[in-house]
Image 1: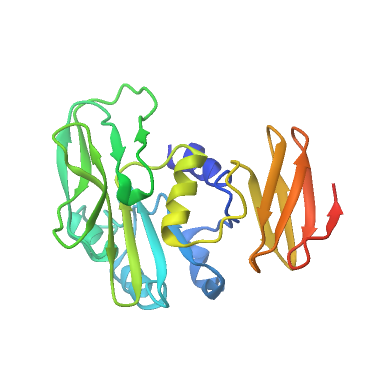
Image 2: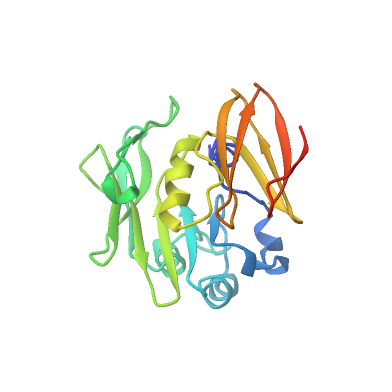
Length: 238
């Protein structure tokens, strides 16, 4: 789900998205990113966890963790690794079906994440058990904390036990982290090198908010792509 569905839907959040392998993260210029999302990063050794705490969890950046980050170190499985890297206490519980997540107002909106139907049964799931963390979502089964946010001195940590599977969920999540949202229309945005590209599936009127606050109004056709100047909003290609 995380890579095949969740990552794809993140591109429909209205934020500009860039992707890389975990092994390439240390080669990225992280100063340009407000939020870093760790998708299927189940395997991390001690040195990698320490590197993240030193180099990523800083400068008031947001770190978003999905499902079971760092649960494996190459030798053992242990929730203490998850707790270490997320900065909040995370443990497990037993569930005989895929549970449903209910987001609350702290997330920015009340919405429900219903996982795709699956034959998975008798599974272990992760939950947050930390009194200092803010609850963002609970599981329908027994009310376990399924998503939480914890502010630290230099960064904010967010953990989700199940990955978002809709662009609207990513949109709310990125609003929560203070990431720049170009539009709320479930469009794909790529920004960089002084350009902003907007691609829409359904079309319709769009108000694109540039980082300098300028609003660019577009009337877009279905499956249309528009390229504009990131500062002036001048349309360069459509």
